[in-house]
Length: 409
Image 1 (cartoon, rainbow, N blue to C red):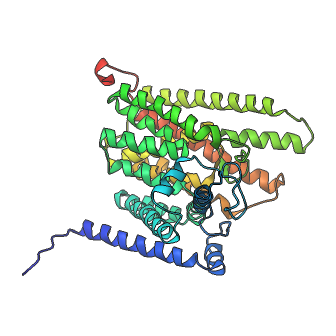
Image 2: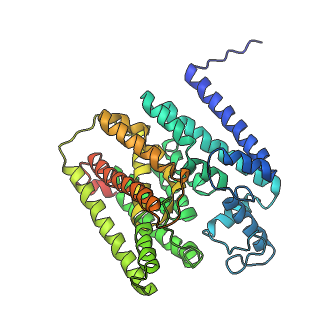
């Protein structure tokens, strides 16, 4: 019996990408079995190292083990290596329990599957990118300190990245609605991806209702326990967001003995800073909608969808969060679409993302001249990208404010 296999060159490449992704993931899992090998490997990529490996996702697994033994990990977590109280939305515990990830073999299979999918999506980004300079840029970004730290930590943001990226595969309205809803319950910030559905102007009423439902669930199962003193606001060179800027301001005035503020006063300043950032985001978005600049591209193409999703998450997290730079991987989604802009804009944006995505390459003593200059450079680039993406989303949404009754049903 003869079997005829009809595979085109593109399908063969994707098959190859899948095999390579799995092999790399298995290699990383094998490395994680020995501390010296793990540390030596990540030393080559200049990222901070932790033990146990995949420390963030291991924290969830250990918290689940405590819970299964009748211990509330939100209160005390002796199963965790550092005895750190559980720090993620409770949704993760439910999912880990359903998948039985307290079992070490199941846990390793889960890690291989998630890392393989992440790496496969990296290859997918290169595949849909046409310009050679952008392909090369993406290749370097995949080995950036932000990307490597995301993997080394086993941070759950890599799973959020997978879920959000999957919107281009499960592109139906209700599939997208479910993925964004699920992602929001897992880490809150994917809530900003709802902009993608609102912008489509399809079933806006249904989208708004689910947004309200999502906010309710976030508070009931996540925010009431998730936001506590274990979640400090970070102000480092390797962070981004308005809250990182305000926290840096607080630290400077306190270390210089200029002024000491009460926590209530700090919270008011943080709220005001986010509202100001939100106003400017809306302003630049509006300027984009009325701009005469035109971008020639195919509507609803994968590159456009990824650009909108990556931009929405970066803008939302910039306004409301203090974020470690491994979350910059969502900017990788925006790179393929950049080829629709002028060559100069494309190059400047690409190199800007490469610079900030390698922020862990250097570290300086706080408040030294080198530290101030380095942090100022990184924060300035991140602010410029924030403004550019707000304006660009406006360019892609010129009829955003032209609503019809049919858009709501």
